[in-house]
Amino acid sequence: MHNTTVLLSGAGIAGPALAHWLHRYGFAVTVVERAPALRPGGQAVDFKGHTHRTVLQRMGILDAVEEHKTGTTDTVFIDQRGTRLALMPGDFTGGDVEILRGDLSEILYRRTADHCEYLFGDSITTLTETGDGVHVEFEHAPARIFDLVFGADGMHSRVRALAFGPERDFVKYLGYYYAVAGASPWSTETTGPRERATAYAHNAPGRLAISGGPKAQQMYLFAAPELDYPRDDRAAQRRVLMDSYADVGWELPRMLAELADFDDVYLDSISQVRMAGRYTRGRVALVGDSAYGNTLGGFGTGLAVVGAYVIAGELALADGDHTVAFGRYDEIMTRYAKIAGNSNIGPFLAPKTRLGIRARNWFLGSPLFGLMAKYGDHAAEDIDLRDYPALVGVRDAG
Image 1 (cartoon, one colour):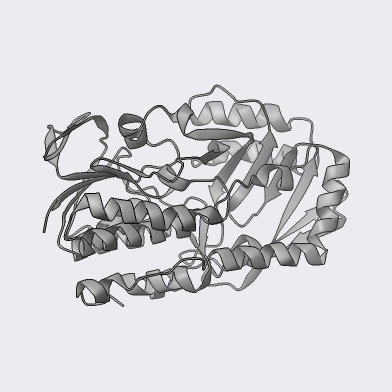
Image 2 (image 1 turned 180 degrees about the horizontal axis):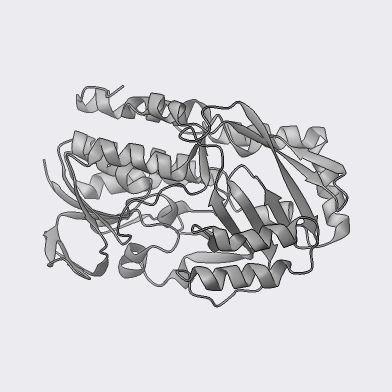
Protein backbone atom coordinates (compact mmCIF):
# COMPACT_ATOMS: atom_id res chain seq x y z
CA MET A 1 0.00 0.00 0.00
CA HIS A 2 1.28 3.46 -0.94
CA ASN A 3 0.60 6.71 0.94
CA THR A 4 -0.54 5.19 4.21
CA THR A 5 -0.35 8.25 6.50
CA VAL A 6 -3.17 10.72 5.99
CA LEU A 7 -4.31 13.94 7.65
CA LEU A 8 -7.96 15.03 7.62
CA SER A 9 -8.97 18.57 8.53
CA GLY A 10 -12.45 18.78 10.05
CA ALA A 11 -14.29 16.57 12.56
CA GLY A 12 -17.84 17.42 11.51
CA ILE A 13 -19.45 14.90 9.15
CA ALA A 14 -17.21 14.43 6.10
CA GLY A 15 -14.02 14.11 8.15
CA PRO A 16 -15.08 11.28 10.50
CA ALA A 17 -16.90 9.53 7.63
CA LEU A 18 -13.69 9.56 5.61
CA ALA A 19 -11.66 8.54 8.67
CA HIS A 20 -13.93 5.52 9.08
CA TRP A 21 -13.33 4.25 5.56
CA LEU A 22 -9.62 5.03 5.39
CA HIS A 23 -8.98 3.19 8.64
CA ARG A 24 -10.92 0.16 7.40
CA TYR A 25 -8.74 0.08 4.28
CA GLY A 26 -5.50 0.15 6.29
CA PHE A 27 -4.51 3.83 6.36
CA ALA A 28 -3.13 5.55 9.47
CA VAL A 29 -5.49 8.48 10.06
CA THR A 30 -5.08 11.75 11.95
CA VAL A 31 -7.98 14.22 12.20
CA VAL A 32 -7.42 17.85 13.21
CA GLU A 33 -10.34 20.00 14.34
CA ARG A 34 -10.15 23.66 15.33
CA ALA A 35 -13.02 23.38 17.84
CA PRO A 36 -12.01 22.19 21.33
CA ALA A 37 -14.50 19.31 21.19
CA LEU A 38 -17.32 17.88 19.09
CA ARG A 39 -20.13 20.37 18.58
CA PRO A 40 -23.34 18.97 20.11
CA GLY A 41 -26.87 19.62 18.86
CA GLY A 42 -26.89 21.85 15.83
CA GLN A 43 -29.37 21.89 13.00
CA ALA A 44 -31.01 18.79 11.57
CA VAL A 45 -29.47 17.15 8.50
CA ASP A 46 -30.94 14.42 6.34
CA PHE A 47 -30.39 11.52 3.97
CA LYS A 48 -32.59 10.52 1.08
CA GLY A 49 -32.83 7.60 -1.30
CA HIS A 50 -31.26 4.20 -1.81
CA THR A 51 -27.73 5.53 -2.44
CA HIS A 52 -27.46 7.34 0.88
CA ARG A 53 -28.97 4.45 2.81
CA THR A 54 -26.64 1.96 1.12
CA VAL A 55 -23.56 3.90 2.19
CA LEU A 56 -24.86 4.22 5.76
CA GLN A 57 -25.57 0.47 5.77
CA ARG A 58 -22.08 -0.38 4.53
CA MET A 59 -20.64 1.86 7.25
CA GLY A 60 -22.66 -0.04 9.83
CA ILE A 61 -24.38 3.09 11.19
CA LEU A 62 -27.81 2.98 9.54
CA ASP A 63 -29.49 1.54 12.62
CA ALA A 64 -27.87 4.17 14.88
CA VAL A 65 -29.01 6.96 12.53
CA GLU A 66 -32.55 5.57 12.55
CA GLU A 67 -32.51 5.40 16.36
CA HIS A 68 -31.61 9.11 16.57
CA LYS A 69 -33.86 10.40 13.81
CA THR A 70 -35.86 13.51 14.61
CA GLY A 71 -38.89 12.64 12.48
CA THR A 72 -40.64 14.70 9.83
CA THR A 73 -41.66 18.36 10.10
CA ASP A 74 -44.20 20.03 7.83
CA THR A 75 -43.72 23.78 7.41
CA VAL A 76 -46.92 25.87 7.24
CA PHE A 77 -46.61 29.39 5.80
CA ILE A 78 -48.93 31.85 7.55
CA ASP A 79 -49.74 35.55 7.39
CA GLN A 80 -49.67 38.12 10.19
CA ARG A 81 -53.02 36.89 11.55
CA GLY A 82 -51.98 33.23 11.51
CA THR A 83 -54.00 32.32 8.43
CA ARG A 84 -52.57 29.36 6.56
CA LEU A 85 -51.25 30.27 3.11
CA ALA A 86 -49.23 27.26 1.94
CA LEU A 87 -47.62 24.01 3.06
CA MET A 88 -44.10 22.74 2.44
CA PRO A 89 -44.18 19.03 3.38
CA GLY A 90 -41.51 17.59 5.59
CA ASP A 91 -40.90 14.80 3.12
CA PHE A 92 -39.39 17.47 0.86
CA THR A 93 -37.32 19.31 3.49
CA GLY A 94 -36.24 16.31 5.57
CA GLY A 95 -35.53 13.47 3.17
CA ASP A 96 -36.02 9.86 4.25
CA VAL A 97 -34.34 10.17 7.63
CA GLU A 98 -33.43 13.34 9.51
CA ILE A 99 -30.96 13.54 12.39
CA LEU A 100 -29.38 16.33 14.42
CA ARG A 101 -25.95 17.20 13.06
CA GLY A 102 -24.40 16.79 16.49
CA ASP A 103 -25.92 13.31 16.92
CA LEU A 104 -24.57 12.19 13.54
CA SER A 105 -21.14 13.64 14.33
CA GLU A 106 -21.10 11.76 17.64
CA ILE A 107 -22.04 8.47 15.95
CA LEU A 108 -19.22 8.85 13.42
CA TYR A 109 -16.71 9.94 16.04
CA ARG A 110 -17.41 6.97 18.29
CA ARG A 111 -16.79 4.59 15.39
CA THR A 112 -13.38 6.12 14.70
CA ALA A 113 -12.02 7.49 18.01
CA ASP A 114 -10.37 4.23 19.08
CA HIS A 115 -8.59 3.77 15.75
CA CYS A 116 -7.79 7.31 14.56
CA GLU A 117 -5.83 10.14 16.16
CA TYR A 118 -7.92 13.27 16.86
CA LEU A 119 -6.30 16.66 17.49
CA PHE A 120 -8.97 18.99 18.89
CA GLY A 121 -8.40 22.72 19.41
CA ASP A 122 -5.88 22.97 16.58
CA SER A 123 -5.75 23.78 12.88
CA ILE A 124 -3.43 23.71 9.89
CA THR A 125 -1.37 26.84 9.18
CA THR A 126 0.79 25.77 6.22
CA LEU A 127 0.92 22.99 3.64
CA THR A 128 4.11 22.39 1.70
CA GLU A 129 4.07 19.56 -0.80
CA THR A 130 7.31 17.73 -1.50
CA GLY A 131 8.09 14.89 -3.84
CA ASP A 132 7.00 12.22 -1.39
CA GLY A 133 4.62 13.91 1.05
CA VAL A 134 3.09 17.05 2.51
CA HIS A 135 4.86 18.99 5.26
CA VAL A 136 2.15 20.31 7.57
CA GLU A 137 2.49 22.99 10.24
CA PHE A 138 -0.17 23.47 12.92
CA GLU A 139 -1.12 26.30 15.22
CA HIS A 140 -0.15 24.25 18.28
CA ALA A 141 1.03 20.73 17.46
CA PRO A 142 4.54 20.07 16.15
CA ALA A 143 4.98 20.01 12.38
CA ARG A 144 4.59 16.61 10.70
CA ILE A 145 4.80 15.03 7.27
CA PHE A 146 1.83 13.11 5.84
CA ASP A 147 1.49 11.23 2.59
CA LEU A 148 -1.92 12.78 1.81
CA VAL A 149 -4.03 15.63 3.19
CA PHE A 150 -7.82 15.95 2.96
CA GLY A 151 -9.86 19.09 3.52
CA ALA A 152 -13.20 18.19 5.11
CA ASP A 153 -13.47 21.57 6.81
CA GLY A 154 -16.57 23.07 5.28
CA MET A 155 -17.55 25.96 3.08
CA HIS A 156 -14.81 28.20 4.50
CA SER A 157 -12.13 25.52 4.17
CA ARG A 158 -8.63 26.33 5.43
CA VAL A 159 -7.20 23.45 3.41
CA ARG A 160 -8.79 24.75 0.20
CA ALA A 161 -7.35 28.22 0.83
CA LEU A 162 -3.86 26.83 1.46
CA ALA A 163 -3.77 24.32 -1.40
CA PHE A 164 -5.97 25.85 -4.10
CA GLY A 165 -6.22 29.59 -3.46
CA PRO A 166 -8.30 32.24 -1.70
CA GLU A 167 -11.95 31.63 -0.89
CA ARG A 168 -13.15 34.38 -3.24
CA ASP A 169 -11.88 32.33 -6.21
CA PHE A 170 -14.06 29.33 -5.38
CA VAL A 171 -17.03 30.44 -3.27
CA LYS A 172 -19.80 32.49 -4.88
CA TYR A 173 -22.13 34.51 -2.67
CA LEU A 174 -25.76 34.06 -3.75
CA GLY A 175 -27.31 37.17 -2.22
CA TYR A 176 -28.83 35.76 0.96
CA TYR A 177 -27.93 34.88 4.54
CA TYR A 178 -29.44 32.30 6.84
CA ALA A 179 -29.30 31.70 10.57
CA VAL A 180 -30.32 28.91 12.90
CA ALA A 181 -30.71 29.27 16.63
CA GLY A 182 -31.41 26.55 19.16
CA ALA A 183 -31.03 22.92 18.23
CA SER A 184 -34.10 21.23 16.84
CA PRO A 185 -36.38 20.58 19.84
CA TRP A 186 -37.14 17.07 18.61
CA SER A 187 -34.27 14.94 19.86
CA THR A 188 -34.60 11.29 20.82
CA GLU A 189 -32.57 12.13 23.92
CA THR A 190 -35.22 14.52 25.27
CA THR A 191 -38.57 13.75 23.66
CA GLY A 192 -38.29 10.24 22.29
CA PRO A 193 -39.08 9.29 18.70
CA ARG A 194 -41.79 11.15 16.81
CA GLU A 195 -43.40 10.76 13.43
CA ARG A 196 -44.64 14.18 12.32
CA ALA A 197 -44.73 17.73 13.62
CA THR A 198 -45.52 21.21 12.32
CA ALA A 199 -43.42 24.36 12.12
CA TYR A 200 -44.70 27.81 11.20
CA ALA A 201 -43.13 30.22 8.73
CA HIS A 202 -43.79 33.85 7.90
CA ASN A 203 -42.53 35.97 5.03
CA ALA A 204 -41.92 39.65 4.54
CA PRO A 205 -40.36 40.74 1.23
CA GLY A 206 -36.83 39.35 1.16
CA ARG A 207 -37.17 37.77 4.59
CA LEU A 208 -38.30 34.48 6.10
CA ALA A 209 -38.64 33.43 9.74
CA ILE A 210 -39.51 29.92 10.94
CA SER A 211 -40.47 29.01 14.49
CA GLY A 212 -40.06 25.39 15.58
CA GLY A 213 -38.58 24.53 12.23
CA PRO A 214 -37.19 21.32 10.78
CA LYS A 215 -33.57 22.48 11.12
CA ALA A 216 -33.63 24.29 14.50
CA GLN A 217 -35.98 25.97 16.98
CA GLN A 218 -35.58 29.19 15.02
CA MET A 219 -34.50 29.74 11.45
CA TYR A 220 -34.03 32.95 9.49
CA LEU A 221 -33.27 33.59 5.84
CA PHE A 222 -32.95 37.06 4.31
CA ALA A 223 -31.62 38.94 1.29
CA ALA A 224 -28.71 41.29 1.91
CA PRO A 225 -25.51 42.62 0.38
CA GLU A 226 -22.39 40.82 1.60
CA LEU A 227 -21.98 41.56 5.28
CA ASP A 228 -18.79 42.18 7.20
CA TYR A 229 -19.05 40.51 10.61
CA PRO A 230 -16.87 38.07 12.57
CA ARG A 231 -18.20 34.56 12.03
CA ASP A 232 -17.15 33.45 15.52
CA ASP A 233 -18.83 36.38 17.32
CA ARG A 234 -22.30 35.27 18.44
CA ALA A 235 -23.20 38.73 19.74
CA ALA A 236 -22.46 40.25 16.34
CA GLN A 237 -24.61 37.63 14.65
CA ARG A 238 -27.51 38.37 17.00
CA ARG A 239 -27.20 42.08 16.15
CA VAL A 240 -27.41 41.31 12.43
CA LEU A 241 -30.64 39.39 12.99
CA MET A 242 -32.12 42.06 15.27
CA ASP A 243 -31.43 44.75 12.65
CA SER A 244 -32.74 42.65 9.77
CA TYR A 245 -36.05 41.65 11.40
CA ALA A 246 -36.88 44.56 13.71
CA ASP A 247 -39.90 45.66 11.63
CA VAL A 248 -41.34 42.31 10.50
CA GLY A 249 -44.00 41.77 13.18
CA TRP A 250 -45.71 38.36 13.56
CA GLU A 251 -43.81 36.31 16.19
CA LEU A 252 -40.53 38.13 15.58
CA PRO A 253 -40.51 40.20 18.80
CA ARG A 254 -40.72 36.98 20.82
CA MET A 255 -38.23 35.13 18.64
CA LEU A 256 -35.66 37.91 18.71
CA ALA A 257 -36.01 38.24 22.49
CA GLU A 258 -35.30 34.51 22.82
CA LEU A 259 -32.06 34.74 20.83
CA ALA A 260 -30.17 35.68 23.97
CA ASP A 261 -31.12 32.32 25.51
CA PHE A 262 -29.50 30.28 22.73
CA ASP A 263 -25.80 29.48 22.84
CA ASP A 264 -25.81 27.93 19.38
CA VAL A 265 -26.73 30.88 17.15
CA TYR A 266 -25.15 30.37 13.73
CA LEU A 267 -25.24 32.89 10.87
CA ASP A 268 -23.65 32.42 7.46
CA SER A 269 -24.08 33.31 3.83
CA ILE A 270 -25.93 31.25 1.27
CA SER A 271 -23.10 30.46 -1.08
CA GLN A 272 -21.93 27.83 -3.51
CA VAL A 273 -18.49 26.25 -3.90
CA ARG A 274 -17.43 26.09 -7.54
CA MET A 275 -14.34 23.97 -8.16
CA ALA A 276 -14.88 23.28 -11.88
CA GLY A 277 -14.76 19.53 -11.27
CA ARG A 278 -11.28 19.51 -9.74
CA TYR A 279 -11.48 18.62 -6.07
CA THR A 280 -7.88 17.44 -5.91
CA ARG A 281 -4.48 19.01 -6.40
CA GLY A 282 -1.27 17.06 -5.99
CA ARG A 283 -1.48 15.21 -2.68
CA VAL A 284 -4.42 17.26 -1.38
CA ALA A 285 -8.13 16.50 -1.86
CA LEU A 286 -11.35 18.17 -0.75
CA VAL A 287 -14.43 16.31 0.51
CA GLY A 288 -17.90 17.52 1.48
CA ASP A 289 -18.83 21.21 1.60
CA SER A 290 -15.24 22.31 1.02
CA ALA A 291 -15.49 20.72 -2.44
CA TYR A 292 -19.15 20.88 -3.52
CA GLY A 293 -21.04 22.81 -0.87
CA ASN A 294 -24.27 24.65 -1.69
CA THR A 295 -25.85 26.17 1.41
CA LEU A 296 -29.26 24.66 2.22
CA GLY A 297 -29.21 22.92 -1.14
CA GLY A 298 -30.71 19.81 0.43
CA PHE A 299 -27.96 17.34 -0.43
CA GLY A 300 -24.93 18.49 1.57
CA THR A 301 -24.77 15.73 4.17
CA GLY A 302 -25.50 12.99 1.65
CA LEU A 303 -22.86 14.36 -0.70
CA ALA A 304 -20.32 14.45 2.12
CA VAL A 305 -20.91 10.85 3.15
CA VAL A 306 -21.00 9.55 -0.42
CA GLY A 307 -17.90 11.58 -1.35
CA ALA A 308 -15.97 10.16 1.61
CA TYR A 309 -17.04 6.65 0.60
CA VAL A 310 -15.94 7.17 -3.01
CA ILE A 311 -12.52 8.74 -2.44
CA ALA A 312 -11.55 6.20 0.23
CA GLY A 313 -12.73 3.32 -1.94
CA GLU A 314 -10.86 4.56 -4.98
CA LEU A 315 -7.67 4.96 -2.93
CA ALA A 316 -8.01 1.41 -1.64
CA LEU A 317 -8.60 0.02 -5.13
CA ALA A 318 -5.56 1.92 -6.41
CA ASP A 319 -3.41 0.53 -3.57
CA GLY A 320 -2.95 4.05 -2.26
CA ASP A 321 -1.84 5.58 -5.58
CA HIS A 322 -3.38 9.05 -5.31
CA THR A 323 -2.59 9.96 -8.92
CA VAL A 324 -5.04 7.25 -10.03
CA ALA A 325 -7.58 7.48 -7.21
CA PHE A 326 -7.91 11.26 -7.18
CA GLY A 327 -8.58 11.34 -10.91
CA ARG A 328 -11.37 8.78 -10.52
CA TYR A 329 -12.82 10.68 -7.56
CA ASP A 330 -12.88 13.94 -9.55
CA GLU A 331 -14.67 12.19 -12.42
CA ILE A 332 -17.27 10.42 -10.28
CA MET A 333 -18.08 13.29 -7.96
CA THR A 334 -18.18 15.94 -10.69
CA ARG A 335 -21.17 14.08 -12.10
CA TYR A 336 -22.83 13.27 -8.79
CA ALA A 337 -22.25 16.68 -7.21
CA LYS A 338 -24.43 18.18 -9.92
CA ILE A 339 -27.34 17.40 -7.60
CA ALA A 340 -26.21 20.44 -5.60
CA GLY A 341 -26.41 22.29 -8.91
CA ASN A 342 -26.46 26.03 -9.30
CA SER A 343 -29.63 26.29 -7.25
CA ASN A 344 -30.22 29.12 -4.79
CA ILE A 345 -32.83 28.41 -2.12
CA GLY A 346 -32.91 32.08 -1.10
CA PRO A 347 -35.32 33.47 -3.72
CA PHE A 348 -37.62 30.47 -3.23
CA LEU A 349 -37.90 30.72 0.55
CA ALA A 350 -37.67 34.51 0.79
CA PRO A 351 -38.95 36.16 -2.42
CA LYS A 352 -38.10 39.85 -2.56
CA THR A 353 -41.61 41.05 -3.46
CA ARG A 354 -45.12 40.35 -2.16
CA LEU A 355 -46.06 39.16 -5.63
CA GLY A 356 -43.16 36.73 -5.51
CA ILE A 357 -44.34 35.44 -2.12
CA ARG A 358 -47.84 34.81 -3.49
CA ALA A 359 -46.39 33.05 -6.54
CA ARG A 360 -44.25 30.82 -4.34
CA ASN A 361 -47.25 29.92 -2.18
CA TRP A 362 -49.23 29.00 -5.30
CA PHE A 363 -46.32 26.88 -6.57
CA LEU A 364 -46.17 24.89 -3.31
CA GLY A 365 -49.75 23.73 -3.90
CA SER A 366 -49.35 22.98 -7.60
CA PRO A 367 -48.38 19.76 -9.40
CA LEU A 368 -45.16 21.51 -10.49
CA PHE A 369 -43.86 21.34 -6.92
CA GLY A 370 -44.36 17.59 -6.89
CA LEU A 371 -42.35 17.30 -10.10
CA MET A 372 -39.51 19.33 -8.57
CA ALA A 373 -39.47 17.07 -5.53
CA LYS A 374 -39.33 13.96 -7.74
CA TYR A 375 -36.40 15.43 -9.68
CA GLY A 376 -34.48 15.81 -6.42
CA ASP A 377 -35.20 12.20 -5.51
CA HIS A 378 -33.96 11.04 -8.92
CA ALA A 379 -30.80 13.17 -8.76
CA ALA A 380 -29.85 11.64 -5.40
CA GLU A 381 -29.57 8.26 -7.15
CA ASP A 382 -27.56 9.45 -10.16
CA ILE A 383 -24.37 7.54 -9.40
CA ASP A 384 -22.99 4.11 -10.19
CA LEU A 385 -22.17 3.23 -6.58
CA ARG A 386 -19.42 0.65 -6.52
CA ASP A 387 -19.27 -1.87 -3.68
CA TYR A 388 -15.78 -0.84 -2.58
CA PRO A 389 -15.58 -3.03 0.55
CA ALA A 390 -16.35 -6.13 -1.52
CA LEU A 391 -13.98 -5.10 -4.32
CA VAL A 392 -11.17 -4.41 -1.87
CA GLY A 393 -11.92 -7.56 0.10
CA VAL A 394 -12.80 -5.82 3.36
CA ARG A 395 -15.63 -7.30 5.41
CA ASP A 396 -18.75 -5.14 5.34
CA ALA A 397 -19.43 -3.30 8.61
CA GLY A 398 -23.19 -3.68 8.28
